[in-house]
Image 1 (cartoon, rainbow, N blue to C red):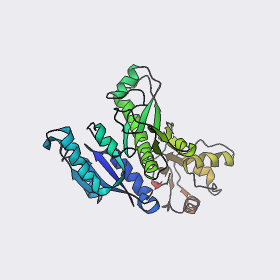
Image 2: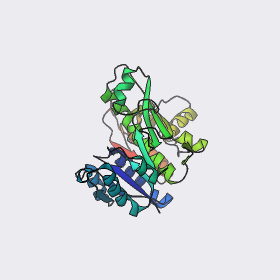
Image 3: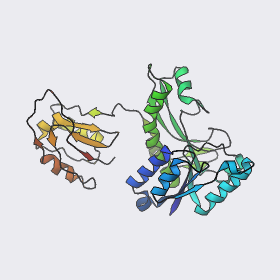
Image 4: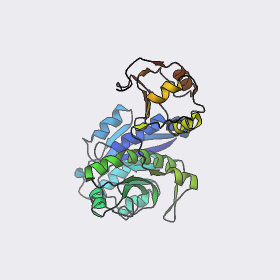
Length: 313
């Protein structure tokens, strides 16, 4: 079993994203990866409560209790060492690590930075991107080095910068993509798919493609139906990759009423009843679609979704 240790200072939203992905993809069963511990330099960090609720070791190493940075890092290292981590994840850890600490776990410490490095290292990255007139912005997962935000790049996510954006709206647009990017980078490094060699992140083309995530206008995306069933099928498969065929039964009503929400990984059907779907059995979707019963309602007004089914990525 390969252990992952997460360092936080607050709520740890990136830790929560990694945890959700690890549970949904069954990292422990499929890959032998386990989030073994969450360690915080703030004893009251909310992320520690989350870890305890999930049965993960939660450890506090208060930096204020140590006279020097070196003394704090020795205590932090002593807390990490028993887990023999394959990866150490900085998830909102608000302490700059010294060169000696980084060298101790070289190639194992990851951080996520809210900018497209090497642009905008440091703080206030969203506002700096807006002020610079950037048309795109993003986040970067990188190996931690002795240079602040200067380690080798593992993966990046990209979103557009709009003329009306503020730092708050830009940060909100980017956050879901950070939460998608970071878990995949953590998994890739833990499995040895990405390695730090001579100061560079080395990976295959396939892995590099997987760790480059681009914005798509699909948070609340209505399937663009057309007359040709094959095109409809291709469009649905963009959202439901494992769906091999499109059901012929009830397609005319289905195409008017299906909305796919990728953010929540759910398909909601308006005007119809949708039976529960077993996500582990793709055929369940076809059976559920065949069971659709359209309710007689005026077509001009959409009622609220009556049911939803969770879909795998």
